[in-house]
Amino acid sequence: QVRLVESGGGLVQPGESLRLTCAASGFTFSGYFMNWYRQAPGKTREFVAQITNTGGKTNYADSVKGRFTISRDNVKETVYLQMNSLKPEDTAVYYCNAISRKSDDYWGQGTQVTVSS
Image (cartoon, rainbow, N blue to C red):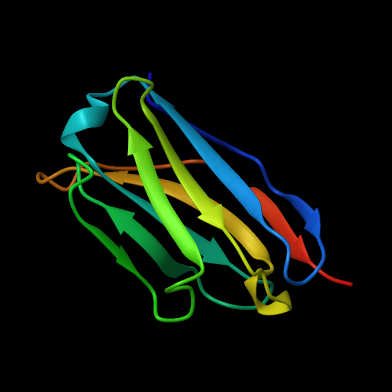
């Protein structure tokens, strides 16, 4: 059974940091690119960050570049999103996504991040 379980969301003030974690199971984690997406209220889901299956390359949305860092641990089958200098516009539900070269595509249930003073 494939599972992606996000955690680490919460309520923080602008300028603070959060670290999201996505624990994977039920598939060959090391063979999948991992992504983080987010969806704010009333908006469509948007790409945030990607890391290749080996962790050798990363890619970020312009809105988070320089503030967010994606990383992975293929032994622990976990992907992380370190979010620094958070802004109110980062408020959203954050989703973990796994995608293979064959386009097998899995999603987690999401974790809420709220940035507010």
